[in-house]
Length: 131
Image (cartoon, rainbow, N blue to C red; front, side):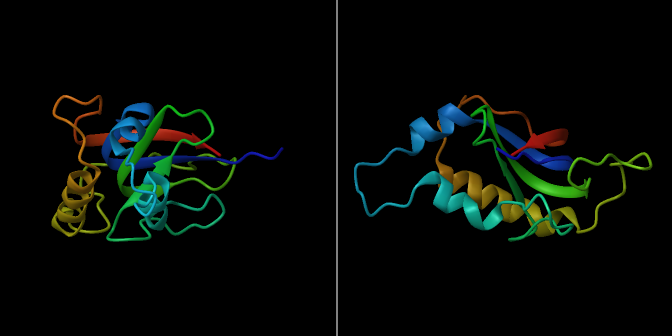
């Protein structure tokens, strides 16, 4: 079994994996799975590009089932690499916040999580994401 790990600096939210999946369950087999909805936003461990759709990246913890991180990535390490220099999140946005906050809000609305569902507040996160 192979594994990859990248570290990300992201502005967004972190959802509880199990809660998101339990809320998403639908009886209609024609309804897309949560994975299918989020897949266009998912990052590739081996590509340097991030934010593949609407300025957003999804880090989907399918390995351990702990979190689904959704947001705008400003820095990413290579596979099994580290940051060579400090990353300053303040004032280092590659895209204006307005360009990704609206799609982020729309995606979270589509996920339809109940009020008070476990998730982080909107903010900066540093995540070492294993696949």
